[in-house]
Image (tube, rainbow, N blue to C red; front, side, top):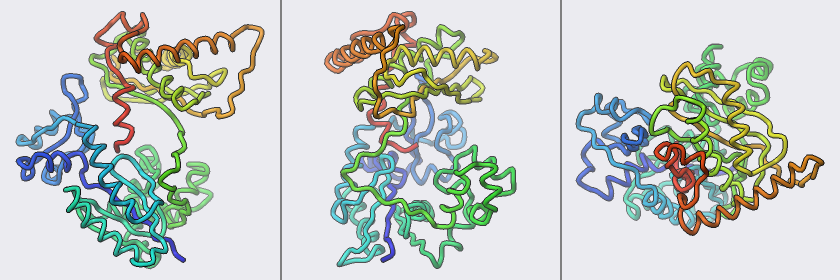
Length: 410
């Protein structure tokens, strides 16, 4: 039996929720955007009317206003978006328990073998129910694999169902730009374009040896995706998603001008990342940092840490070593990120003569105690002296901010 997989995508999710809650905004150009005062002033999403002005996600609000002077900007309200996401999810649960979320506003469903309805009928029923019961619209892709189902939900918007099957995928999928294919980001798109590969069809028909030379095994994987050969299953709704990395980033309240500024921000980020890792009982071995200067040029660097750890002090130490080795202060810095990957799920403490393992264990216990204090009395009840050197620069809370943003799409 051929798979019937749906990808349900809430159209312009944040903006749609705001327009539903505030009907007076319905016929006006609306964007949900960050705070310009804290230099997070970018578009997170916009409604269909605002889209006509060629506004893009991630665009600075001042630039968006130049394109659309009538633009109404609404601050994000993540707890409300989570509640609306749950309402949509509740409807999906009426059809299957094979539901895999992809962000706050997207879900894959496997509806193969439904006794009463086929996949297309289920998709149309979901589309109508979400509109009537939740007040927003969804676009749905129906296909025999997850990759093409997602392409289908993006193909026709808003409030539509697109079917991609083995008979029509070459006509629908192959002419699309290669950047539309899941797992192809800006860097890969740029590399593909430099070799004359512009469409998904180009990827599908590229030479195996060539793809492996430029992208390694990922090149062959992308070719399989482009040819509809994705066999990954839709996970059960109760299955925990594998955690590949834990990280936080921030655009700082002012430009960073020296190593001391950088250390303050890395300290706050490291504490958040370490706390989240301890909640999942994880220890990581690879640390990466992301740096973006005030010219908006950015890069990522990573290093292997000596031992698996979830101690923030060790994250800061390694982050500063990486930073000093890779940044020459040609320009001030606008934003920083810190992430840990390569988790050691079977981490066994190996004690050594230097006593580093015992020290790490003590620091972990200390930081766990601090976690409990922050959970009870708030994030700012206790802070490291490094952060207090500049309270304005260090006064942000990526841990609480992350609670809702992890569920959101880009």
